[in-house]
Length: 138
View 1 (cartoon, one colour):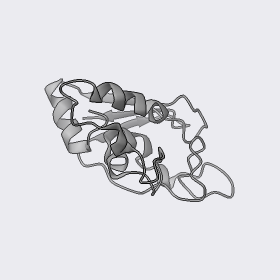
View 2 (cartoon, helix red, strand yellow):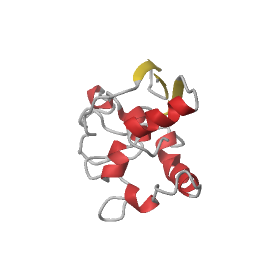
View 3 (cartoon, rainbow, N blue to C red):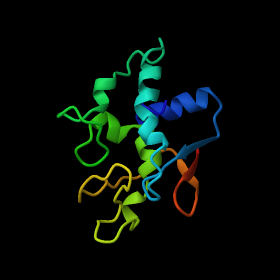
């Protein structure tokens, strides 16, 4: 479900009776073992199942073949539930002097800002002080 757009992922969460979803995000703190860095493994595993046959790893790479999370990221990446749960409201946060708000200290997207967006079906329930733990209510 995390590789799917928010509305499709929400349907999956409801089928599984999920009330809350937790993600680990290191963009503010510089913690590089976060969920968005492990996301390609989730895509590979999900795409290897009959239910996830529609998930193709190549859809999550930029046109230049890179794994990107900034404005140059693929449509599938920027619309995935994982991306949205990690980066929701991140564009409001100052993480590093001399960098734009929303600067990801792990993936270091130059001076390109993370795209702003709203959540459609999930609600932010908790974000820790340094944004490592993020919990959403479905």
